[in-house]
Image (cartoon, rainbow, N blue to C red; front, side, top):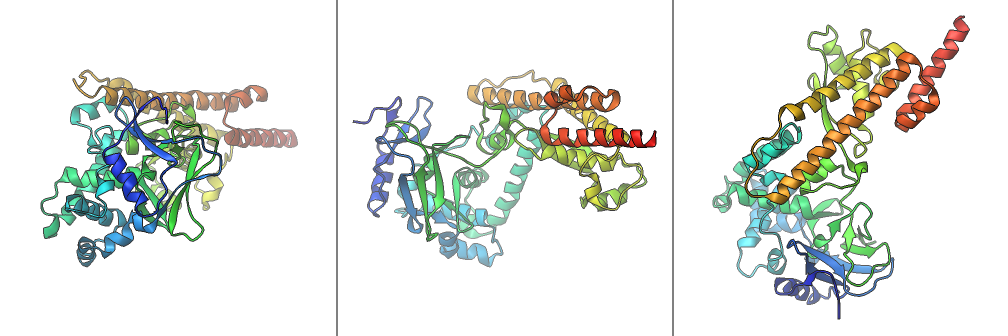
Length: 423
């Protein structure tokens, strides 16, 4: 008998396993159970060895763009010029969810009824818990985009009774539970119950013939232990916006900053052309979870603060002179300080009566964003101290990120050599 810390549940779960088993799909290594918070997850039915195939889902049981395009609703969407994969699959998902005796019924009955824990579905009061964070703009922009797509779909008679919330639900099912097979987005019954971990004990992949998804164990897994996979290397900002949770591990922290050109700069047009951007401002995610973000922001600011523009973008990938780098770092420091001030000036005074877990998630997310910005304030202040006062290198090595540290040290040593040569 399987013993787990959480309750094994049956009903619809049992029907899903039967549906898959009736097609010859082996589900005996996996059990669905529910935790005390009501979340369903996969656990090992018995001890599993590393390298074992835990589940193989053939194309016949993957809901993807191919079956959506061949459906009645898919053909009508294509005729209307709607070809985007997520929109097609959402329409098909909604149609099948309302169809009696749908082939997909055992799977559809297992999908979450709502996604209230995901910020896309937050109430206005709950969104106010995120005041000061640029993630609000990201969430509202996502809502706007989905609303635009929804109004296009509702032009079809078959979609006229679908509500915006229903369409957002379908898009979120796909966004939060999808896989890819041959470059196409698919939904994988049972496989999509595996939760995310940064160091998962299993992985999903295509088979050699590229006509099925396979779940494979990476480690030895004890009976009753949760089966986990990776949703990809995503920062906490991306995880929170898409899935409603963040890692405790600070390696995934990130924050968004906005860097901009001086609109009064006589070289602004040339600088925009050099960077191939559409306007004078750019949003950039920085932090351990976005390893290229800091260097990207610094390259932008080297160009922004430059008084004499170079013709090649590569000229700004590394520090050029000590003075130029000080100007870029000062601009970066000011940007981080301004972003931090937004959190302090928008302190939340009203707290929703419901949604205790969502409130806790918001606080956790905001705390890691602020921690990231404070890290860069300290980080850049140390770099400025080094450039302006020439502190000892061994001190700098403990404070600065490795790639940028090497660039700074190279600049420092190059200028030392130039000074000696000039002397």
